[in-house]
Length: 426
Ligand code: DOR
Image 1: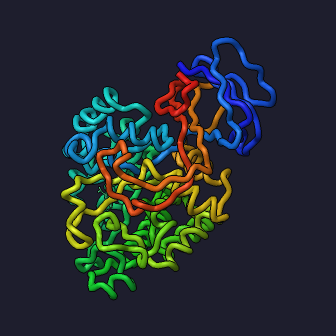
Image 2: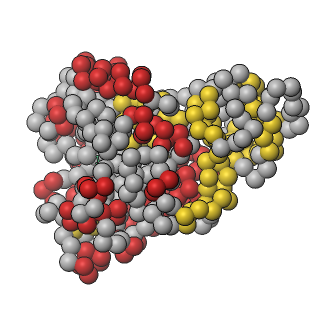
Image 3: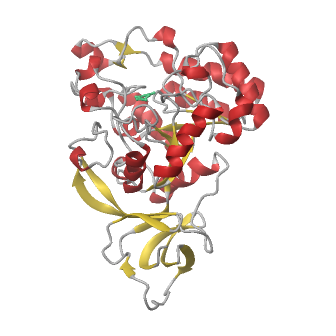
């Protein structure tokens, strides 16, 4: 169990940052305040210029196991997450077998119990095999999963989504929706915008996302289910969610760092720029930034989606959809959102640590007397993203070669250091 005294850091405590010392004894947060005295056998770390934030949480990652261990495993994925400052990730169900019954769920849970170095909460799928034809048995799964999602695919049939929401509502579980109307795709694979036109690519319309969000919000109005939209990418979706919230509906959403940092004109002819939904126009990016600022988007998730080198090296048209993000999320958010003055570090802690937990009824924050769960970051450390440094098996990210600011120095989960760069800390 961890013992450490961190002096003079900025600690996120009671919903605000305060200049303070933090003492952790035997894995428990013992005290936070000014002038905490050092004691024997407790290593002391100089926290000047550093932030201590609650451990980051990501409600949208692909750990690929069981089924696709050549892309990632629960072990490599959670090690990568610990390196990124995360202490909780929620694993998406597009696996083999899909966790669509208790037996398949148990298979994944066994690997989590054996190999995860941080907390992993798995999703159950909404439809059997994520095929969109038949609903899972919600009663059999609700107490074994974080929430229900068919991530990777939208639920196409309105009636089926309605029933899914009714069942989830009755069991007190959220529906977390990948929104994509397949009738509006027309073979597209990047955003249907200027870059696609200039370079002769087939585009994915914004409508394919927001049309399904619009349908789902209508169904939330009928069912009252807790509903969270995955990886939102369009300005229309921001507006729809903003209106739904103003109406008092139980709707929330997430976006990912790459949608806030880039627009389609930043694309290059490489699979590392390809994900679903795609990076959209500058107007969409700006609307997403506004959405984060005004609280419409309360959660940042990475959609960490590792694929093999071969799967990502076939250019924009033929590469698999998905990019990794768990090891660069903090630095990307710090660089593109905090350093640019769009949000404060408090807000970053809210959208990366607090809200992803509280929105889903999980405890959040750094609390004296409780098991330590936090991350120590240096906001000013400059580095160039080199995916050879990644712990994840996935190496493809649009942040490759970009200069970012922000380093994770220590990640503490359940009272233990799961990632540590301090020589003083054992
Ligand atoms: O880019 C994506 N990759 N989007 C998804 O919805 C699925 C994911 C994956 O599983 O690779």
